[in-house]
Amino acid sequence: MTTPVYDFVRGYIEKSPVRAHMPGHKGASQECGFGAAYEYDITEIKGADALFEADGIILESEKNAAELFGAAETVYSCGGSTACIQTMLACACRKKKRIIAARNAHRAFINSCALLDIDVKWIYPVYSDSIVSGDITAAAVGKALSEYDADAVYITSPDYLGHISDIKEISQVCRRYNAYLLCDNAHGAYTAFLKENIHPVRLGADMCCDSAHKTLPVLTGGAYLHVNNEKLVGQAKEYMSMFCSTSPSYLILQSLDMCNAYLAGAFSEELAVTCQKVTELKERLSAVWDICISEPLKLVIHTVSSGLYGYELADILRQDNIECEYADSTHIVFMLSPKNSDDDLSRLRNALEKVRMPKLLINTPHVKLPQMEQAVSIREAAFSECRLVPVKEAAGKICGRAVTVCPPGIAAAVPGERISDEAAEALFKLGITEINVILDSDWE
Ligand SMILES: Cc1ncc(COP(=O)(O)O)c(C=O)c1O
Image 1 (cartoon, rainbow, N blue to C red):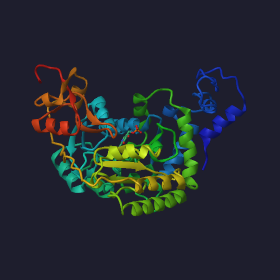
Image 2 (cartoon, rainbow, N blue to C red):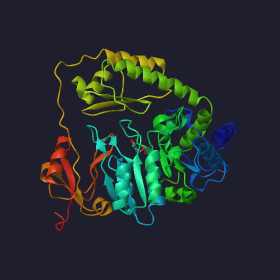
Image 3 (tube, helix red, strand yellow):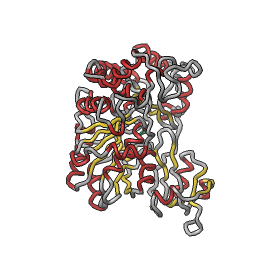
Image 4 (cartoon, rainbow, N blue to C red):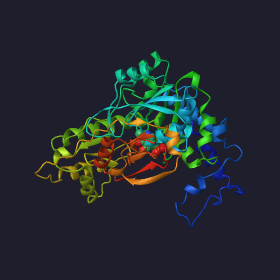
């Protein structure tokens, strides 16, 4: 597969030009370190194309990506999935400005709704024992669509704990109600290359974002916005340009470009081998730990059933120089990829196998996220003046800023929601001690 962006920059470097253009480092900066990275960091010089008006090498590279993922159109983002989520909502929610979303959405979604003044009807997942993850059924989506006239449905799959929703069935329900299905697939770019392709584009989502940087060898910030519905093709660039810098990173663009060649070549085979190794690791560890069912490249452990908080286990593993992706009171999450060596996997296995588990089991309070009344719109609240109050004094007041546990950035309270007594209690149990409430005597 061609790598036109990388090839262009390589050719430019080889010509040793006088760089009388931005950026100011001129291709070399001893003061700032990173060595060769500077050489490859260029701007929109002649022949380099431009991300938001792509008609040259960037367009060719994006078409390569679209072919690999089976999308009608793929647009690169140097602003992560966050910029893709903003763009998806701008494209798909223009008419009614209403969307149905699963409540375990990342805060990037809530911020996008605030920016675009989109109203949300939440579907609450059938939670396991974490507000981060849960099951969203097609039946729940159908019920919400029958009660709420929305432009689109927004589902996060896989979620932070690696739970995958039935996108195929949900997409069929959405089609019945003439609503677009938008999928936050930030954690699942690689799923298109599994033996069984379970990528949302394949399963019927109309648009979907993949943080390429989360699971593929792409620099941080690199993401794909896939468009899978002819009605939405051709709109993304214009909208994405409204949210992003006019100076996108050519380093990120080149890493997305080079990743295409890797995906077209060795990746599927390497992925299959890694998935097999991770499956074996999970099987072996399940003799000792409570391993959760998750997408293939995540190892998720329910730690409390072994008498440890997730963050305690994370600290124990740090002594063995192992850094996890995420840990909270109940779980720990490791994200693995074909770029992890066999040595990485054995170090992880050995470290987990030697952990001493406390004899006494601990209890974590089972916090059920209460459903709150949306007293004012997300936008109105998010842009209102606020004051920070102890969460115990917040009951009856209106939440002014998203209250997230970060990572993973899932909202426990959304701007505009009236905090009930029950909600204030639940937020406190989740470790949230203060909350921004709207400063307006009419609403207080
Ligand atoms: C589920 C989910 N969606 C969206 C995002 C935002 O992605 P990005 O960091 O690529 O902007 C994240 C980031 O962690 C995420 O976990």
